[in-house]
Length: 134
Image 1 (cartoon, rainbow, N blue to C red):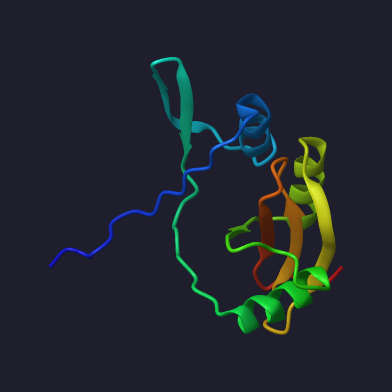
Image 2: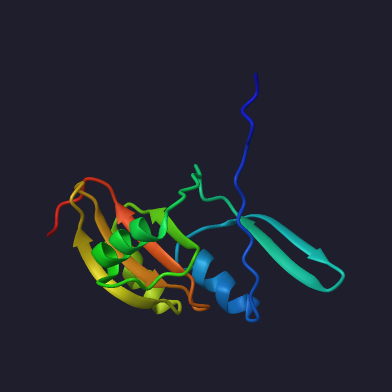
């Protein structure tokens, strides 16, 4: 029997398309998987690998935000992206318009997590599993 969901896609709409494209492509080092131009509109798709959907109640969101950012700061949607090197990812993303929300922290479960906001304010957790807190 086939899985009930085969792929997760998240669509972000922005007033500054080129800025957000640079942030997610050059900043994260991603190549477009597909590009669409329809009736004067522009879009691209980035392959982010495996996807999961996390559902939090307000208390869990507060716990995670406090751990990663020092206070409840994220909205109802926040990305969490596993990266090979959190510090290098922060540097690249800040160069491309990210705002550093909080420096990396070592989580109780052993990951190194940092919080940035993309140029439109979307909160993004960058995490490196099993990383030491050098």
